[in-house]
Image (cartoon, rainbow, N blue to C red; front, top):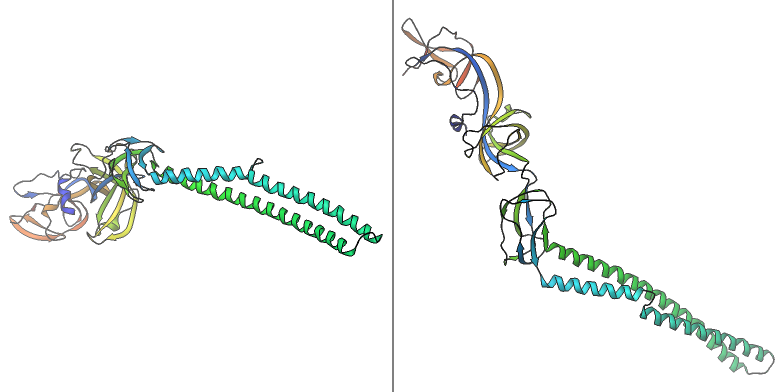
Length: 364
C-alpha cells in the first residue's frame, strides 16, 4: 500500500536539501508526517431501491444521474392480480358496511322477525292470562290452560332467540366490516407497493431494471444516495492504524481532478481488521470543496499525523537500514548511527547524532 505514496504529491513534504554529487547536509525544514491511505468516495444515505411487490415493470421514471426528491415516484409495476384483489376487497367492504347501515336489508329482516315475535308474545300473553281467569271460574278445561301457557312460553323463548340472533348478526357484520376493511387496506398497500417511491432527497447512481422486465419481491431496482453529502471510505495498513485519531486532517487526490487537492477530517475509525488486505477502514468527511458525486470515485490520501515547522532533517534516501547513515569527514567515510524522530516518505527528522555541518553521503 505505502509504495503508492511516492506518486501522491499532496503535502509540503518535498525534499528541499541541496545535493552535491550524492551528498547532503542536515537542514532545518518543515516536516509533515502522514499515513498513506486509499479508498473511494461514496454518498451518505445510500440505499438500494428494492421491489415490495411482484409484477411487470411498466414505467421507469428515472435515469442514472438524475436528482430525486423524497417520495418521488421512481417505478410503476403492473400486476393484474393485485388490481383484481383490491377491487374484490373494496366490494366486500362496501357490502359489509351496507349490511351494518340503518337501511341494511339483513338487519331489517331480523328486526322484523323480532317485532313479529314481540307481537306474538303479546297475543299469547293476553290469551294465557284470559284462559287462567276462565280456568279459575271453571269456564275452561285445564288442557286448554296448559296449551295457552305452552304457547306463551314458546313465544317468550322465540323472542329471546330472535333478539340473540339479531345481536349475533350485528356483531358478525361489525366483524365482517373490520375484516374487510383490513383486507382492503392490505390490498391498497400492496397496490401502493407497485408504485415505488424514493425515501431520500438525492441522486440516482445506477438503475437495474428496464420496462417490460418481470420484477419480484426483493429485486433490486436502483441505487440512490445523497447527491451533496459525500464521504471518503479509506483503507489504512494495519501497521499505521494505531497512529490514527478522530479529527486528524486528511488530504485527498483523485485522478479525475489532477490539479486539485481536497481536504477532509477523520470522522470514524473502524476497529475490525480486513484480513484480505490487512487493512482497517477509516471514514473521512470532506471539509470545504468536495468532488462531484461520482459513486465509488477512487482517491488516494495522506492522513496528517504530525506537523513540525522547524526540525533538522535529512533525505530518507540517505538512511541506511533503520537508523544509520554514511558520513564523510577528512576524506574518510564511516557509517554512524543517529537518533531518528518523525519521518515521511521523503524526509527523516534528526534528533541527535548529526549536525548541520555533517556531510552525509550515499556509499555506492
